[in-house]
Image (cartoon, rainbow, N blue to C red; front, side):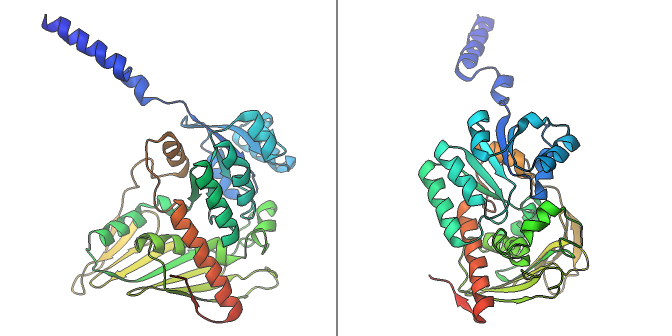
Length: 366
């Protein structure tokens, strides 16, 4: 009798919940790729065979570019369509990742949202607040996830610094400093298709300001728990007008909060590539040196010490597993990529542009 009861219980569980292995397994997320001109696209093309996502279509009118990339990653040119609309109609993806210009992000959401297709764009969310508000309205109306991908979201060092802030190990935050950028897109050898729009004030919304200023704005909004700055003050330099005649290549942005300041240094003039973050509290500091290393000093009497930190737990360790988990409902949206955070990021960037143009501090509406 006990064996019979156990068998019946097991059968009941199987009926209610299915086989454990089947319950854990889910089909790969069907993903479309909108554009190939943003070289961050290598991130999804290079991991397409991991099994959690499947690229069902690519929208890219530049056939030469599409041929280069599909050959590089062993993908079929049969995946490539000339327009986004055709790709959506023929392949019916569940989500689309945008790897074209920042200006085109709005077009991607306009095409996808009414069809209930979720969207992940590369940073920043939009070229300006007008585009951002239209994207937000579409996402909310059609109940889609609209996520923004930043490389720094997946840094274990930033997560470790945030946990120190959350646990009050450093005291209240008083100052944050973000350094982001590299020697310049032309100097580091980005391909022509990327360079053409990255240095276009319309298609990119500027130069170093949107390209790298968005990182600090995103991280500081996160560290300040979504608090709006009181004001934004920015200055820009045009150090290399012969290389970048139409856009700024060096920017400093000051965010003023009631009890803290944030300094964003975004540049195409660093001697080397960097994405590091400094957080100073009342009693201590945490400096994210790179993806995996954190320098912590808890009090004035303590010596600073360096820590090697673990990667964030899956799926918060890389963008496309995260996208699949969010769409499948197995993981909540992360604050760093979420729409409310990134609406404020775009607002900060817009205020910085205005501050540079008008030469004054720009208060943000309360």
